Image (cartoon, helix red, strand yellow):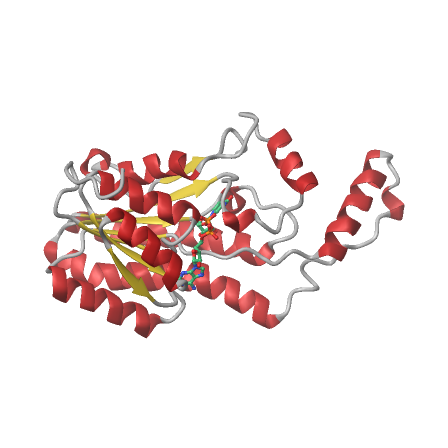
Length: 273
Ligand SMILES: NC(=O)c1ccc[n+]([C@@H]2O[C@H](COP(=O)([O-])OP(=O)(O)OC[C@H]3O[C@@H](n4cnc5c(N)ncnc54)[C@H](O)[C@@H]3O)[C@@H](O)[C@H]2O)c1
């Protein structure tokens, strides 16, 4: 698929944030396969470079939480290429593994199955969050998506054309204990998507969101085997998603086939939500 050109996105300029890994890399490959010129953003220059080379695109290294860096990068890309057609706000992080709390959670689940509710010990995921952990999670996901949306709209609205795809999560629709900051940020992205979509739809710009279920990417590296097995067991389709399966949905939303999709929120969850 690498460097293959030609398709419905011929000549379109696309930015994929967090494009050096996982789903972002799959999005870059899928959009490039249909002819788009993909700008691969990431904090990690090496991984972004590898993906950009593979898809015949270019690299933009910046932190999506840094609004001036984001603005400067988008302005530079538009100055160079003359347009921006698609923005995929995808960059994201997961909470680091917390061994002690994970073990305590397993012990609580065993007690719960035996009906020993009074013996449960508080895991304190929320109480244990520092200001810094909360702040960084919200900044990367919610602020990052806002920065990308605003920077893109500055160029898309005057041209009366463009598509923005925001990557939320099923944890926004069905929050689970253990990542309140992640779920809150992803839920915020849904409201941001719906609000901006209504604002700019009359001007030819579409904004939509995808809520992936559990996708087998490096983001889930902190998860142990028991947690992964539990996820698979609770997912009706019986497995995690491959990034390429999400890329098909993002490709649809990026292109003209989704012309009547405005502020829509698409769970792609294998039946989890
Ligand atoms: N994997 C899942 O199960 C899952 C489920 C639902 C939603 N998501 C969301 O999908 C998106 C992609 O996740 P993934 O699973 O492909 O993860 P991943 O870890 O494979 O890729 C994320 C990429 O984002 C980059 N990144 C992180 N912070 C950044 C920042 N501040 N600025 C620029 N780049 C940054 C990382 O370097 C990495 O290359 C994330 O927003 C994630 O929250 C993932």
